[in-house]
Image (cartoon, rainbow, N blue to C red; front, side, top):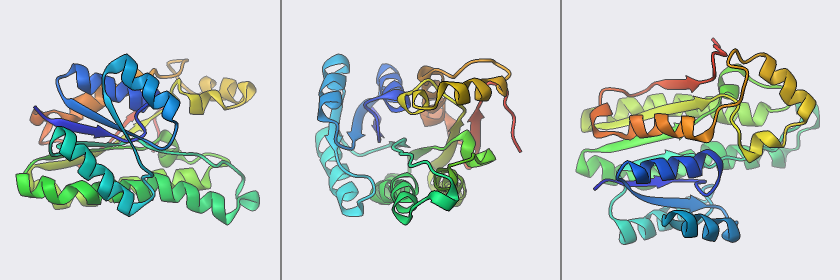
Length: 239
């Protein structure tokens, strides 16, 4: 039975992904940053084990992966879903806001991949799925830090796909459009209304719709799909 690890997995897209992988027959572990109440509720509801560490901390990631592997076995599938926003226009953005977002979103992707890649290479199997964003493709006002982190993830993933291809390790990005999560619900209603006008489907995605794509890319028989960015955007096509 394959082992899957989902970061930022106790709510939103991460929780839907963990549950979908669990339903598909994977042994699933979920990482979370510090909301113990949410993690306990998630485990009570799903039976999926949770582990806490900061993905922006490389040493913590190494230790956390070791904990997961001791409990469940070697990690075959890594879903880098953990992400934060610290929105501000560039002329008002602080250095701290920049570094916090890059550290979690892009640095966390590196830290987690680094913690599992040697084992994947030794076993000659791995699936890395990085959760990008439509805003990493199009940009977004007030999100130069977030957009940069998600755009950087695409380049990271393409390079990793090339490095892993000969060892049956795939690396892909899923770039969700606006999805019905707590992060999006924090957007002002008038702004969200304008955003939805640009989406031909006329609605937000559900977390389950994004999770469905993760399960597809995680499969053993998805081994010829690597280095792609799958944009799930309700028809909001972008260059």
